[in-house]
Image 1 (cartoon, one colour):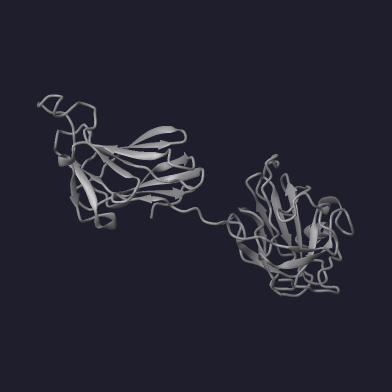
Image 2 (cartoon, rainbow, N blue to C red):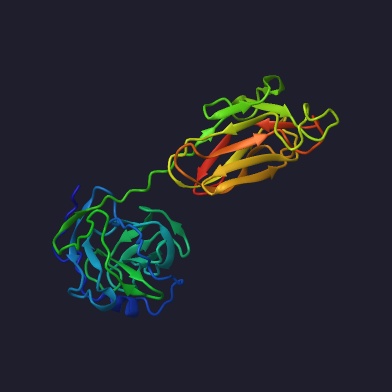
Length: 350
């Protein structure tokens, strides 16, 4: 959809650099490092499918010096402004509440993973706070004409360095390698990232496999999905290695998920409310960096428990293994085997 507004609306009449110095006053931001070669991808900072015109571009008009690589977009007052990329809010100036043009400038700065900072100026209001983490396409404010400007519009640029920093050349993902031109109508594709699915492998679903003598496996109608398996533990005993081989699993199970994308995941084990008494359940997590063993006391726990955060490659190479060797007295404890899940980006288990 095209939303067009002509006339004076959207024209910046005073340098945004002067706005920073005069309308807002001196300020400091959280320290940021220099941008790396792997620049954070940027999307146009408004709703996907909507088009607005460029009213000022690089090194022209008032866009010189500390604003050399800025753009102005003519946009109606109140238009939603969205984060161009995920990051952390390192400046949220929102003291102008009059809704009138001029006066004190409302603006937002977001620092990204590469150390660069995107700047959104002349906002009517600001909906985020200092140090807040934001995701791509998150609402951060609405278009206005606060500061030294006539007509509502959005001033946008990318800076590197500390303080105000230095402007730097950048391109929008929608127009790769292109400097936008005055009068050009540009269409946003800025959408929240598609959430990565959370793989769950239950003890009755594909991806779960039991090993060892079938007669040693017990099952009960409780736990995640109203079903769980259990077995008695292997440990020190006087019956000989044929009955209780020391340091080895007789029965064990493997949960093997289908990981959708390569990234970090928090591995979570579901502990059922009964038949899980061992104080030394030894989970072996196979991940991109190797195999990590985590010991869990199942006895006091019910529900999801974190086994830690690890990097996993896409596919089925990763897994979790739990066996019956606990080093507790032979056949003195039951070990519960229930569901396992992989939460993207180290999110919480619950």
